[in-house]
Image (cartoon, rainbow, N blue to C red; front, side, top):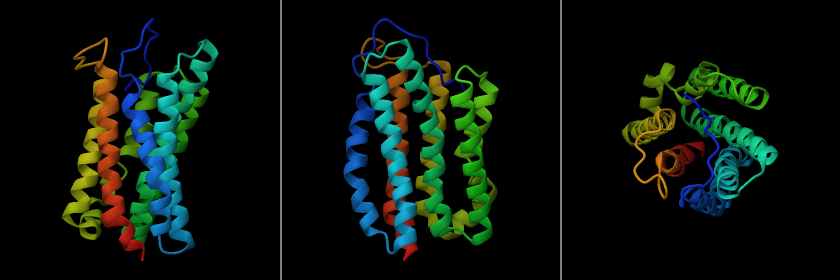
Length: 220
């Protein structure tokens, strides 16, 4: 799916607002989650996850709320798109480390971070890369649990599995909205990009709930 958007003279009124709110919330909750983690290794994994979400929404809010010049816009666009890959891979890291069987954890971590590295490199090195070059690593990272779905179901239970599944579907739906630029309800205030951002925030929230109440307790 394309992750580019043509320059426009004016931004919708709510461009970046949901991600600014999400940045504040994730920054506030991050130290609480890290302190809750039992031990040094779980705290490191938790910090990686929390900081990646903070970076995702923080960079996005900066990129979309500020009117950058051509050079600044290009730099921020690269960072904005790169943090997407890192955040998704970091989201699945505690799931793999704390909840899955060892073989499943190794596979998920390999797929997630391998895809994230490829996707980040493509976005940083080739910001105008064609859609397939971006879509493949994005899908690889976003659905890295598919090969171990039975193991995930067994160890996460119904609630944890459903939260991760719905979150993944919302992330994918957001990518589809962004790719086709529809729906575009109120272009001057809340357009397709804002719908995309809202879906992203909702997906991240569901994953955060799964992490806080289902995945993190398994680290003890």
